[in-house]
Image (cartoon, rainbow, N blue to C red):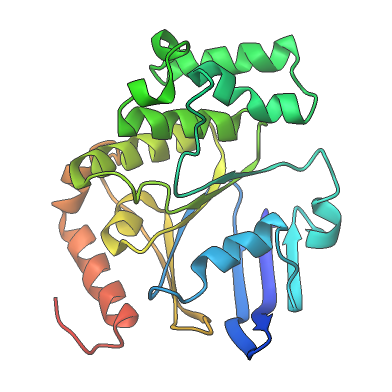
Length: 262
C-alpha cells in the first residue's frame, strides 16, 4: 500500500547574512495511512523544521516530499488535500468564545457552512466541551484548551495531522492523560498523525512507530515499531509494562549514543 506521506532524501538549511545553518540532512521516512508516528531527537535538531517542510510553510532545498503521491509544490495548492497543524500553544483568542475560536478557520476560508458548523458542534459534544462552547478560553483548564485546539484543527477535516509538541505547556499529570486522550481520539477517527516531541516517554506511550533523529543537521538514526498487548487508553498502565521499559532503554541508547545509562 502506498504511504500517505513520503520524504525522499530531504535536506534544508537556514540562511542569513552570517552564512548557512544546516537543519536537516538527507531525511528519508514514510508514514502509512492511519498510523501514529512520533519523531524525537536532541533539542534544536530540526524537528519543527521537518513539520514546516511537510506543511508547505518551507520548501525543501533538496529531495522530495510526497503527500498522496503529489509533491509539496502541488499538494499545497490542492484544496482537496488538507493537512492539519496543531502547534505548541493553543493560540485561542480571549476576545472570542470557544465556539467562535473553533470556526475562525472556516470563516477565513469562506467555508462556514451548516454542514461544517454542525460537524464542529458534534466534535464539541464528543470531546466533552459542548457546555463550554460559549465560554471564553480563560475559563477552560489547560487540558480543555488543548481539546479545543484539536477540534479547531479537525474542523477542516484533515487526513494528516501534524502535532508540534502540543502538550509541552501542560503540567506533567495533565499532560500524561490529555496526550493519551487526544491520541485515542485521533486513532478512533482514523486520522494519520505525525507528532514532534522532546519527551521519549511520551513518544513510546502514544505512537505506533518512533523515529529518532540525530543532532543537527538531523538525519534518521533509528526507526522502531511500538506494539503493546494492552489498551493504550491508560498511559500509566502502558508505562508499567516490560515492553515499555525495553523500548525506552533501546531508544534512549540510540538518542544518547550510548553515553548514559537508564
